[in-house]
Length: 196
Image: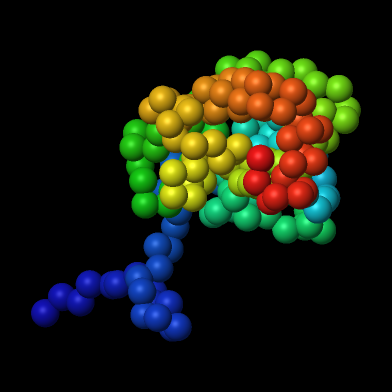
């Protein structure tokens, strides 16, 4: 009778432990470690959003979430340190220990079209827009509240079925300028009525 040697067991939940990581896992870990060592960090302030920080540091929400192991990009906490990965032109390969090197897709960043759609505003207008975004969605383009969609919580009928970040930016700017004339006026209305 031949006895096969089994890999060691984890004593806490009795799962088989892989005694030696695969070459693809080691390469992914090394890449992640090198990226982490070549990055900066910042302290999250009250009112910050991942989307606003992504624009500020020329990266994407996906890269920030991946680099900081954030499972819900709509929830960050003031006072926490945030690792800011390299430039937006880099690609990020997700680290998945169960995947092989050929199965791991790469995520190509595409923040340029969205940021180019955000109009340049003076400090007061930018601050007013940020105030509304923080109170409406915390900067998430994907959040929904009934018929209200995305970063600016626009009525879905205004978006005409196009919920892309670029269209949300375009429609929000158009909506605010036609209805209020400025983001500052929209913010004043929001402070009085809790909507704009």
